[in-house]
Image 1 (cartoon, one colour):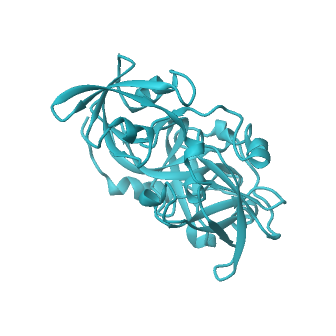
Image 2 (cartoon, rainbow, N blue to C red):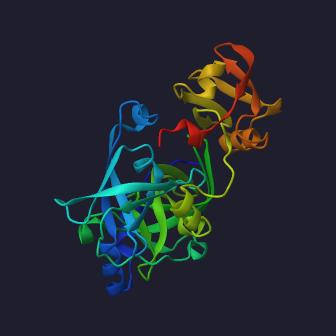
Length: 323
């Protein structure tokens, strides 16, 4: 397939994306999208990759002041502030984080006096639907987009989302941004900038959002216990990418099981438990199928010009992070 970047595609998308949104509902929804700023210690596990100061967006989802965002903006933070108005920070407290979805919850330490955003039904979102991608900042931060795909997303950080929502054109301030439908209801939370191959168009820059229906079964547990009831997967501490069906190690987390076992950047992962790896999602699923955190994970790797066998004793990612 010919890979083509077509700027005109995005101009057309913007022109036709938002034909008939309910203005009153949308205005109310905009007020529920706030700015988040978090500060991290230098020794936080994620500091070397994501930095010690992070900013993004959150969505007020209930009258108690709980705010939904994407987890990497808040996990391990030593202090969190939210901004309803740009120059008036309000302290917030970490509440919960779910690694399976990527959702994070914080709570403002004083009343926000904001009408919570209503949750929509992401199961109804389909390819071609017009949506709004909205960050903190009012109407100037609203961007029209279209859903270009619904499908699997495999992240470099040992993450799979089966029903991701891909939208184009991409929003620059995607982290924790709200994905809104026609009635101004929340359909998803912005996670990452990525690129997707679209037939007859080419490689399209887009955002991936986590669908809101994934939040509903776990929300009460996130608020009450800080995590979802779903058991954690065994974790290795590998950042990897897929190229032509091969899984290549990009980075090994310091102090992780993978580092202790001798895995290195540029290693190619060939097998898990003597079973051939055919891609990034396949690699994760083969690891997760071996059991719970702590299970030994036999890997066959190409390291330099030598094929080696390593055994990684997996861990629980939640226990590794410094929450």
